[in-house]
Length: 224
Length: 120
Image (tube, rainbow over all chains, first blue to last red; front, side, top):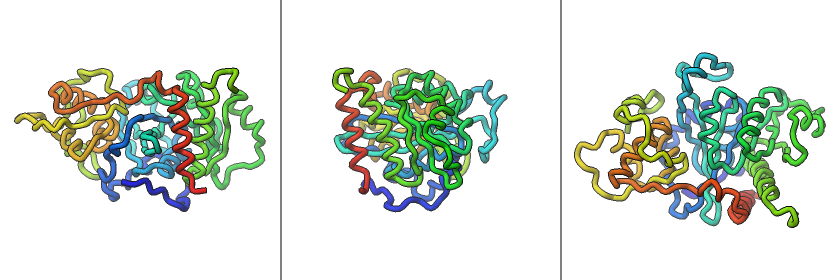
């Protein structure tokens, strides 16, 4: 299937990422899912953030396939304390992990994994993060504290990351960049951008901010 | 297929692998690429392994994509794929090694590829 990004942003609000792909079955579950023959280097980036921050919306806006999801079992220990607020249809101890795929030029295939960032998903997080290039941490400026867990997990895992504020229409606009950096306790070198997860160009820009950060931090000191 | 639209999988994950909990090949990753070898499956191949093999008829899939299509947890597909590799019915190719992800050339190609996606 050829890559055909939508030219207009989806009118849907950038919320409720859990199970956003549940309606995808109608599009044909297996249509276009198989890898292109040109696929050579498979890389992944985590799109991390709390429930409802727009992870699946961002993945959907740039992915060539309708985002798929796997049901990942949670450990018994986490099931006892699972906070199901904001999670619909959760009668079992699994969490849906959405992912999307973008075939880039040069045989590179980029996978985006929507990764829930709560501490109770640590084992799942470690498994998904293995071998990842880095993480794009999505933050909702209306509830910054919901992202503290995920930032903690990213930093502990040692994954390089960038922060993207998903621009919800009713988000407060009076914060300065410095205030937001302070609230999240970001290092000076960590990129921080604003994006509209519904808009593919905007989402690509956020991913580019992360990838550029990866390039810069790997460059030899004297080449900077 | 073991999945049915809009519901729980017909075969629970712990039965799909015949009770085997650990893959014979621990190195299978989410992004390991599975490709059918084209060898006809032997009679009596467990249904879940057959379902995975069927999904590879039309082309290669990563482990995580196969899991999504078959509505099985990634851990179960790791077991099934490992058994199919042991039977030489499937080839598994690892994604880039973790050390290779910091290859400057690879990162530049990712950045170039992303820029090419933009409409403006």
